[in-house]
Length: 321
Image 1 (cartoon, rainbow, N blue to C red):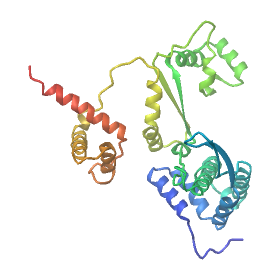
Image 2 (image 1 turned 135 degrees about the vertical axis):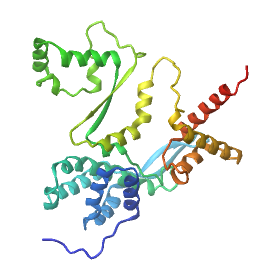
Image 3 (image 1 turned 90 degrees about the vertical axis):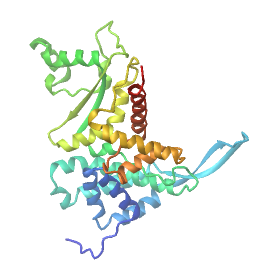
Image 4 (image 1 turned 120 degrees about the vertical axis):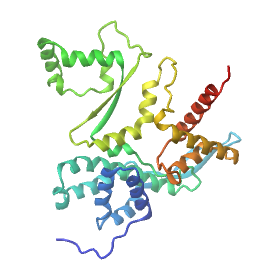
């Protein structure tokens, strides 16, 4: 029987979360949130979750004088919270509406909704009750939950190609042994990080070798999703690829195609610096998103690199013999 809904109420936390994920193009997460927010029992469930999934506990620490002090804080009840959340998700999964959704939605609904409720909601409920805590106004989000169809792995280059070539380009006898070992054809094996240290006897991974990032996507992945995933994860990918590498000259990021944009960034950075801002890179970050003609997001760390490289180039170009 369909319930008649006369009013749709969305609490401030849910509204804020939805807008954050919408702004960050996390459309799969938004689809899950839409289903939750339009359920007539969701707000009642959140009230119950906030009431029962967090509890007061006493912790012991040391004061500035070194003496032992005890204080009470609100924390997540790791027995009650998961049970409440799983019961609610299972209730949704039994609904006619859910069962009429396509397979793709069903595949990612459980993990996304579980993460949202356990992390973004329950974590926020606990933090909010601890007003003196530095995390009291923080809500946890994870963009990667939006990409259940994309995974990334990092490998030492020599290790990756040794395993890749053996698995995919070995002779028939080798492939037969691999199939017996893994129970599937080599081309069906998805590589994952930890098993790759099972190398031939006497072989050692040279951690200074170039690194490889392997992205695995399935046939539900859209081009825009892959691009968005790379943009959001590039800092992590770049850091992982360059970790433990020999020092080498960084590739210039002030390319000709970005020259005019980078000049504007440079000038705005110098302007904010002259005005006395302690973090001109952060001010430029906000300016780029809200006021500049570019309307793009560039991390403060990258902004500092752009300014630094332009300063270096200016010095080189304007040096007289």
